[in-house]
Length: 236
Image (cartoon, rainbow, N blue to C red; front, side, top):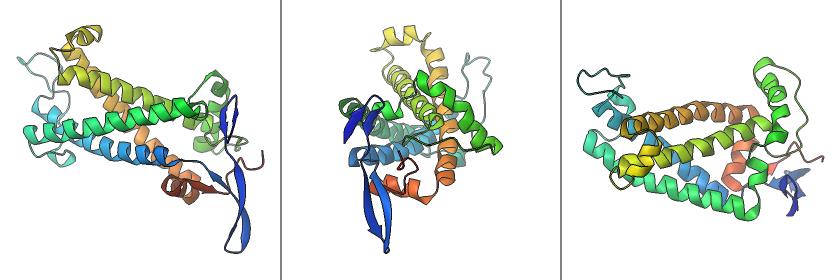
């Protein structure tokens, strides 16, 4: 795998599938696939258990008088009760943080982050991709595994993960990390930022799933096996 200014250049190889010659690219190494699915499962549990924890005190203001922000239906939560939800949340918190750190370490060590991270050179490509997806505009040329809109989404997800982790640490150990909580505006405001990070993930997940559907089975299959058939950038 060669390295360019945009990151590692994926090697395109020819393979015979069902008697037909086709191009295939090894897009997702096993570490990327492992951390992706661990994060997906962890987020599902963390959001569900987090909403159950939130139900115990669904207000960001004083307890008296208490004004609930929103009532979350119990059927949308995980844990059964506050104590159970806390156990689920704290268990998968470590899985989420561990897999996230492994993902970031791999990205930095291999230089793969240059393909995923949204930078200034991707700004001009956001609108053409958004116009194509949402307004049926012409499809821009695809020259990399991730288009600018995907990069923006993935970079935002990394930001949400970092925000959820840092605010979660304050909520988990408020006395030990009081200094960090003070930087965030206090314990009550830290709860707001933690909730906002969850909302960010709730906005990211549907968009991510829509992108998977729009890009077809090959895109999903590549996250299972690592290999992508007929990548759109194979002609470069």
